[in-house]
Amino acid sequence: MVKKREHITVTITGYTSEGQGVARHPEGMAVFVTDAIAGEVAEVEIDHVGKTAAHGHIVKLLEVSPHRVNRACPIGKRCGGCNFWHMDYEEELRLKGQRVRDAISRIGGVDPGEVTVLPGTMEGYRNKAQFPVGASDFGQPVAGFYMARSHEILPVQRCRIQDPRADAVKTAVMEWMELENISAYDEGSQRGLVRHIYVRTASTGTLVCIVANGGVPEVADTLLQLVQAAVPDLVGLVWNINRRPGNSVLGDRFETLWGQGYLEETLCGLKFRLSPRSFFQVNRQQAQRLYDTALELAQLDADTTALDLYCGTGTITLCMARKAGKVYGVEIIDAAIADAWENAKRNGIDNVEFFCGDAGQAAERFAREGVAPQVIMVDPPRKGLSPAVVDAMAQMAPERIVYVSCDPATLARDIGLLREKGYVLHTTKAVDMFPRCAHIETIVLLEREVL
Ligand code: SAH
Image 1 (cartoon, helix red, strand yellow):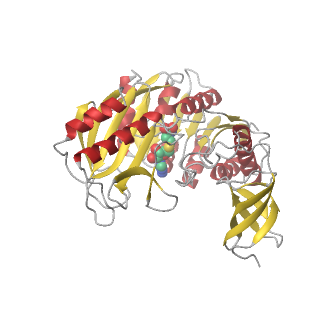
Image 2 (cartoon, helix red, strand yellow; image 1 turned 180 degrees about the vertical axis):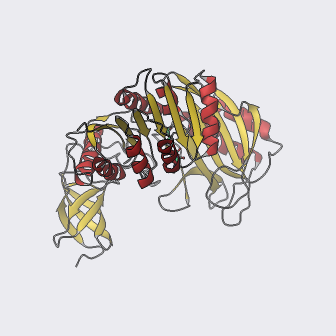
Image 3 (tube, rainbow, N blue to C red; image 1 turned 120 degrees about the vertical axis):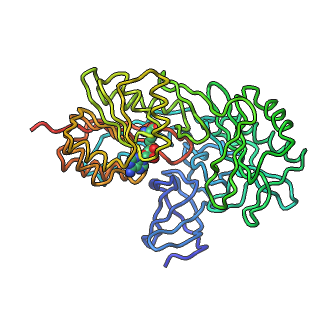
């Protein structure tokens, strides 16, 4: 019997998909250990015993990995955001590559060989921040992050993966609230004004949006002064009203208090307009690498017709359109499709068409209508491709399928399904879009088997 609070001595043999160390209890049960590194021997205290695995933390390290570093984050992981501040980047990249390889070979049934991961900048890479605002026990306004698995706000001075401009804005807004006696929103009573500080940063400047449970107070001038002093590259200050209880951050009404209500950013040489609502990759440098890699694998030329399923605001679609003859993009959110058309127009690209709808239904329709793309690009959410997408793609029989994935397990499952349709795994690459966090983005090229 594995017991809570029991101490055991274990060797860490690998990692879970959330980045915890994996060890085995002497009685056989798997134990997931926080902040552990493969190869380490440790005395571990069991915190929780589940049905198939137990969870524990290190009490004493008996053999320390050479990859262990003390670069602790000032928040000490209490926000539940990052996973890997206790190890060097080399080990993080190795474990991410291994995770992709293991998933594809175990679930997909093919060994992709060693998977190298394109490294990113470890700090300051996030270009979007949403800080919840609340009141401390003494009634002072606080802003930061929700603690892991809770709605309690952890006040944060500096988050190391965030663009420093976002933290500077947060400090300025806190100063304003104290100075002008502005109340923080309280989820329980649904009273109080300021709910979230939403910041987007780009190479062209900073856009700040204050999300509030009501209209603009008279003292907005001092807000602008303080925010401008904190981020001299401010391009816009927006007020958003969200009176609905619940978890969605943004409400429907936006009022631009100063400057412009959007930000401009370039990605792979294309210009994009970002309003607070529009989706944009949070790590621009790595998104460019991801798209460059996807494009290289797609091998497009002026005679190619390509399909981009799950296209979002059309970023990959437009990159492909510069090389291909014609590209069709499909996305389920209509606001993203509106942004995609707008982005095509502002970049002078006219060989694209966007469709709003479910990828499976759209792919079935394309197949029925005899659209025959040589290349299909897919970039689905974590749950991967629906069976309808797999079937319709097989019917269209493209020469190449390029699959961009944020979850190696569902990617691996789909590689197995596409194998049955005659598609062979050719290349596997990974890009580290979220250094210090357990997520990993994978890109694979599947080629139609020539019989
Ligand atoms: N390729 C884009 C976005 C990828 S994110 C980029 O790199 O920016 C995945 C996208 O799939 C999201 O925009 C989401 O809205 C969309 N999506 C989710 N389910 C879908 C479905 N069933 N059909 C079409 N699109 C879907």
